[in-house]
Image (tube, rainbow, N blue to C red; front, side, top):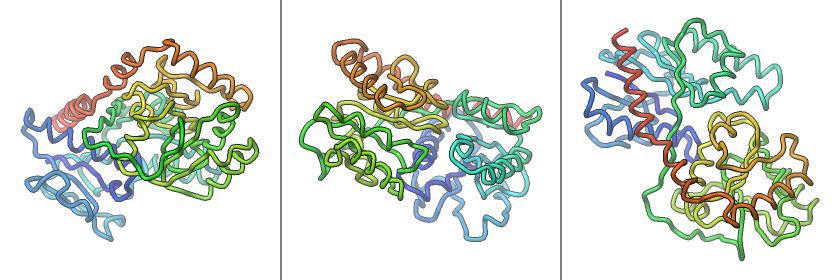
Length: 346
């Protein structure tokens, strides 16, 4: 049996939650083509997430101190590079999403996390990463030895549920962004974009003290009344914002992939991204980019020119949609099944 670690689904409204959820569902859809059983390591609160006839190993309080995989487990897939939950023995596949701490933490914490990842890399038999940028970052900072590293892109989270108008919506057109409200997301650079227009800015995601810096910048540009940090939102509301926004703005300086970018592109929206880490790899020529140093006057010009260019036909919305949808969770699942089977028969 192969067991996939979905422990990070203990934290809703995060990229790792959606990664585990979409990958697990897609792996199960592809299971018909494979003989190996598939199970999932899960937090208690998502018991039976993918049906009654699936094997679940529920997380226990003392698991972080070490545990053994189920007796019939031939391969454990650890889906996060800083996981505390790895069985003592058996074959291990480790997925690395990013080394974002290199861009946001102190030197002391960087070294702590590098040691942790190095320990897991030493334990792993094989490694997957979610972008070529992440692979190069890993090779530059970690000794991977001769272990094989596969790039397996995430899929685009295509929403098939009901889209519901949220309780809060601005009067007029708005720009949208979504992620945890953390300094690495660089949201405080965005309020300047609201000068000389009537746009609102909506930022959704789990809140933190960083919100104060965002609102201080909004006050500096005299646009406080049009900047709204609204906290986490449900999928049905998130997709309303994505489908109704004038543009999606994402100035993050630390991304291993950037799932929200593809979600916005799937609606054919113009996306304005930073040119840091993995975002140019994912956005390619289908996105617009802010200057590297986030000079505010340049950002205002880049945004104004980009909006005009897009809505005058400078980019094809249908082509953007097709590009986003080319990132398929089914393709990701097929690649992971291929890796699983190669590992089982090595």
